Length: 463
Ligand SMILES: Cc1cc2nc3c(=O)[nH]c(=O)nc-3n(C[C@H](O)[C@H](O)[C@H](O)COP(=O)(O)OP(=O)(O)OC[C@H]3O[C@@H](n4cnc5c(N)ncnc54)[C@H](O)[C@@H]3O)c2cc1C
Image (tube, rainbow, N blue to C red):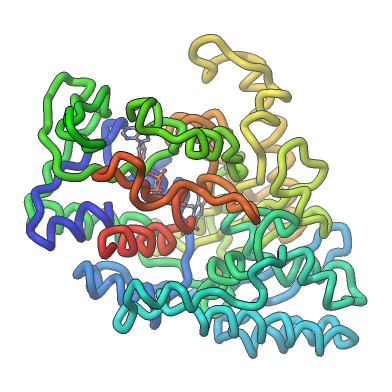
C-alpha cells in the first residue's frame, strides 16, 4: 500500500490488486461485541523519527498519532518482571541493569553496539538518504549472529540472552539465525520508543483509503494476478491477467506477497537456478495463536504490552517444533465503550498447529477437533495472562480466537506473521527481479512490521 501511494503521488497510474474482499492485510481491525481488535499491527517504534518522516511523506500526520503503552518483559518460570522504558537506549540499558547489576557493563555494551549499527544505517534518515549510502551500512558486526554476539558478552545471567534481543519476537528471526545488524535495525525503533497508535490499524487504513481516493489508485479486491504476458524481445512483463479476467497493461509490477506465491507467474527461462533455489529455501517466521476479549465490567488496566516468556529460551520460541513459547499480551483502554480489551498472541508455527489439531480437507472452522484444540489453547493463554496479572484471573471475557490456520488465509501459503526469516548468509528476494520491471516488496522482502514495510517500499520506489 505504501508503494502504491508513493507511486501514485509521483503521478503514476496505479492499480492495487488484493485477493481478499478488502485491502489492508495485517493492518486491518475487526469487531467483536461492538469492540475493535487488531489482527496483526498493535504497536510500533519510530514516532519522532523515521515513522514521523513517513507519516509526513504520505500526508498521514493528522491521522496516525501515538498512544503511550507501558512495556515489560515477564519471565514466567522466574516470576521476573522487567520494565522497558520508552525513552531511548541509555534508559533501557539502565532499567535492565538495575535487575542484573553484575552484567551492567555488558548490557551497556550491547545497546552501544545497537546504536553504533544504527548510526551506520543511513537509510534510517529519509531526509538525507541516497542509494550510494547503502554501502556504508556494512559494519564490523556483519558476520556475527545475534547469539554469537551475546555469547561474546560473557553474561552472568542467562536470562539476558532473551531480554536483550527481546525484539526478535517482533521480527521473527531467532538470535541463532539472525545477523546482529539486521536484528538491531529491526529492534532499534522499538527498543528506543515503543508506542501503540490511537485507533490502531484503523488510523492507517483511514489515511490510506483517503489518499488512494485522492490520487486515483484503482483498487481491485477479491481478485489476484492469474497470469502475466511478456515481451517477445526482452525479459519484460507487458500485461497482467487478473482472476476476474481483466487485462491490465503494465509498466511495472510490485509484488508485496510471498515469493513462493508470485514466482510461478514468471517464465521459467528467465529464472536463474540460484533464484529458484533461494525461494525454495526461504523459511517462514512464526505465526500466532491469538485470543481476544475484554475485562469484566468495572475492571480497568492501563495500556500495557507484556512479552510473556514461558522461560528464557528465545530461540526455541521462534523455531518450529518448539518446546518454549512467548505470548504477547496487549491491554488497551477503549474509552468509547468504557472497558479494557485484551489481545494475547502466542508464537506457533502452522506445522505445529496442524500437528496438534490435524489437517483438514475443506473448511476446518466447525470441525470438532479444531474447536477442541482452540479451546485448549485459549485456556492455556488465559492462564498466561492470569500468571502475569493474578488480579485478572476469572475476569477475562473471551470474544474470539484464531490459529495459524486463520493466518494462512490472510498470509498464504504459511501464515507467517513477519514474512520469511532473515537467516545469516541467506539473501531473501527483494527489489528488482530477473524480469526487469517486476519487483519484490513487503515483509518477505525487506524488513517486517509496518515501519519495515514502509521503509522497504520507499527503498524500492526510489531505486
Ligand atoms: C499477530 C500479529 C501481530 C503483529 N504485530 C505487529 C505489530 O505490533 N507491529 C508491527 O509493525 N507489525 C506487527 N506484525 C507484523 C505486520 O503485521 C506485518 O509484518 C506486515 O503487516 C506485513 O505487511 P505486508 O504488506 O508485507 O503483508 P500483509 O499485511 O500480509 O498484506 C499482504 C496482503 O496481500 C494479500 N495477498 C496475499 N496473497 C495475494 C495474492 N496472491 N494476490 C493478491 N493479494 C494477495 C493479502 O490478502 C494481504 O492483504 C504482526 C503480525 C501478526 C500476525
